[in-house]
Length: 317
Image (cartoon, rainbow, N blue to C red; front, side, top):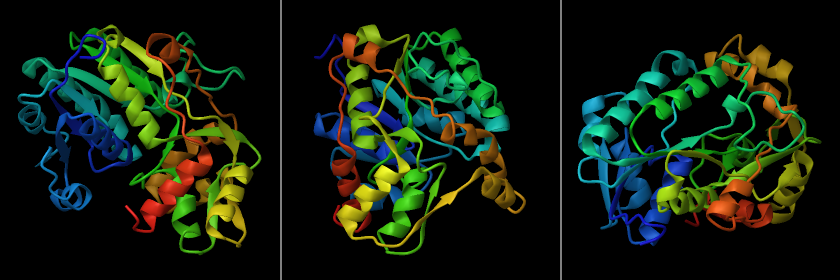
């Protein structure tokens, strides 16, 4: 019993993704039984190797019945599933609506892994939970709509805002885009200005933070910002990668113009253009509320986090 909520079994949606994988691992380490839900059974089996504490369940995240069935007999749902940008406009709000319905029917609590898009442009100061949400992008407005749906629901929910991820199995991330080539000593690229200080959270740190939150009754019905260890420039990240791996090739910068050009051929790239402001005017989160309500934030140094991530990518899992 921690903070008033005893968790015996949890459902993790998106368990084959970066944050979902780390949440599953964190829950298992704490003795919680887990239902790991994703579309690909093979990927789930590859990740979890039939661990006794983990029940693998496949299904369609857009199907209410599949989510409802997976949520049977669990105490809490961790929503860490991600969908491609081009599907957000038509599918994201109904998807979250289905999760809320399933949670209500099965009488479970809910933790939402959220990004920072709803905050809109940076004001230059660190963003707190009281910072007005004024999204100026289509995707930011969709994320704000999701938050409003949650607030209107009777489901006890925690919404946790995170910066960009990196870590074991976090393949759909900007950092992975750079790391996948550096670990193979191929020509690598970095998205955004390499002189700009931004934050990237190590997924096991994020998982620890949300599981800590989930065990405190008073955290439900609230939003929390979960910042990274610190801000860091692309140049500093690349230097750490070089020191850890011996990588000696130039790392090119991916500019907004290049993304726009690639968007001619790729709808995913086209959808990414409007979010490029985050790589030019970074939104940096303030973790004061978490530290006041829960305790010290988990903070792994970039050097240690990158080393563990590259070891995972090299097969030393």
